[in-house]
Image (cartoon, rainbow, N blue to C red; front, side, top):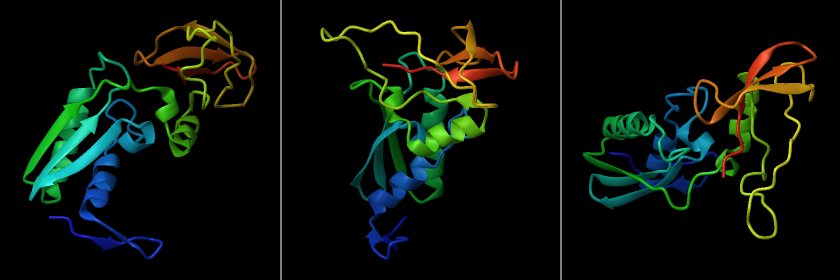
Length: 179
């Protein structure tokens, strides 16, 4: 079982924080360059008794087919670290938004050739709380140009769109801003 350890800053991290770090390091099954922590999908981890942990995951959207694989991967890695009983719950409220993606996650997306969502844009709406229709410039992750065009609203996953850069002519995925 995981025990307290000394962290990088010299302080100790308790078993719950260590288990959260371990679970958060699980790669996303659809975008393995990102971890569950990078995506902000790992909502909580609680030690509920000796050798018993409850994990809360929030998928990127309600029908996300990868949530079962994420749950299985989290359960496996925690069992490998001495947790006997792992319960993984899917938490849909509050819903996940792209604002949950960490700065490191955005950096990794761009490095991987996927235009990350802009921070702070998820949930943006008018004064009445409705969506605001705006055609925002999407920066090409290959050359940096904002002269890009939408090819398809959906790409390899429902949370990405397919775009092409008019400057370098390269196609790329754009992780859509989701509210």
